[in-house]
Image (cartoon, rainbow, N blue to C red; front, side, top):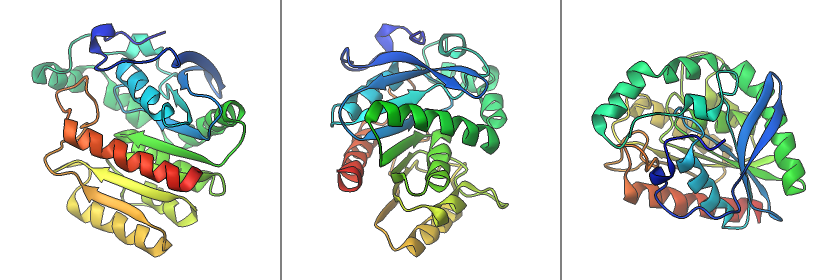
Length: 261
């Protein structure tokens, strides 16, 4: 079930600890990557491009810190990971631009409503708890996954103790279902590493997010990673920014250690 951007797209070494599994979700079977054993659980929310080798690589690295990491295909309603995977090399800027205009990825993101996400989260969290042997848990999300991770903390306030959100978009929106409003009900610590000059997360949104985080009285990170564009952690695209990616891993590892250990 490995999504085919091809093995050459993996930028490092993924150990055999990453395994494909299937989760019984509300509207079918959702593929997922699972790694690690015998540690706290971390739910990994993918970006809009989907479940693929780069995600496996990231899951593997987080699991190597001593966690059980689960990364589900949230787009299982639309097709398998392989069916939805990019066919062109997204490290080429022109291919990346064409992907966003022709792949239907943004339509899938828009169709993944908060209601669908909340229903799926019940199944994903149950699977993670079974694999990890209980809670508390953390979550980390990328691109639109940052919104899902933030909402998860409000949906499971006593269970989710750590939330990482990286190059997230739309974290602050008009209306009562804005993702950042979930922070009020949460008990987690949050770390947000924003992309630089991201139209989906402008300065006023970052400021509003910071004000909401400050009210909690808990430590938080809410910073723009200079020079890093939207999608900076994804080494299989032209948006990759190595320095910002390593900063994200450092911040995430510290967040998980102080909240789940």
